[in-house]
Amino acid sequence: MALRPRASSQPGKLSFFNSPKVASVLRLRAASSYTGTMLQEELTCTVCYEIFKNPVVLKCSHSFCQLCLQQFWNKKKAKRECPICRRTCSLTEPTVNLALKNVADTFVKEQVCKMTVAKTGAKAAEVEGQSGMVEVKCIIHGEFLKLFCLDDFEVLCCVCHTSKTHQGHRVCPLEEGAQELKAELKNDLIPLKNNLRRLYEAKQECDDTTVHIKNQTQATEKQIKEEFEQLSEFLQKEEAARLGALQHECEEKKELLKKKSESITADIVTFSNAIIAIENEVASSNVLFLQDYTNTKKRAQIPQKDPEKLSGVLINVAKHVSSLKYHVWEKMVELVQYSKRLADWV
Image (tube, one colour):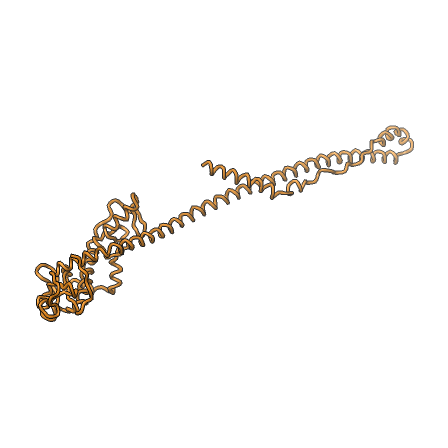
């Protein structure tokens, strides 16, 4: 039987839930500093975004529904990690979180009781039956609410059923009506849960993409540094080679000038000695001068030597500097092309 509820004309009365252990709930609320919303957030699974069902806890202290965690790991295949902090989990994890399970179950039961009281107005009228079920008495007639009106969508006691208000209405047992409507709402939950799951998957994709971008950035940063290190090493080698060539030319030119200087020095000594000898002969007595004139005359016949003008001894600056950047750039292009061919080959 598919039920189609319509708006109620009177406040309804409903109770078909398992016992919430009212005293435990009151003690929990008195001891807790949380508001209802804050407590609900703490008791919400971050995977399915519902109150914990059979919660389990990992060593990182994060808790999830057992089924949600298993489904999350199944999507990750062989990768077992915490959905929140991404810590790798051991094979001994997870363990059942009994304390959290008791609190979550108690919270759900308390919320159900609040909804029941809000709908029926049955304040302080709920008692726990022998079956462990919470039963609510009608605040008008004092009888337990056992029936459900299909026309007015209200819970009734046996006296309400016989009243004029519900005379001729379709009525069924409370449990039967509850099961029918629960089944209908469960069907309504399917698209909502599917949509929530898609939203979570989209959020998960964003989180995974964020992590991937971070890894990409680190890898790319490392690659950029390596590329610039290669370029820097290449430039340093080129600089050393260019300075080495300059230094080599400098040494060659210095050696050439050294030999030239030594040759000129030898000529200077030769001419200086001849001049001194001739001057001494001229200053001597006439007899000695004339006696040695022939030898002195030969000394004066030394071949004249004009010093050669220095040429080609300066550093060829243009050779080392002209188009330096262009030639280095050409080699860099060759290096880049080689690296590209190597990358394509790999």
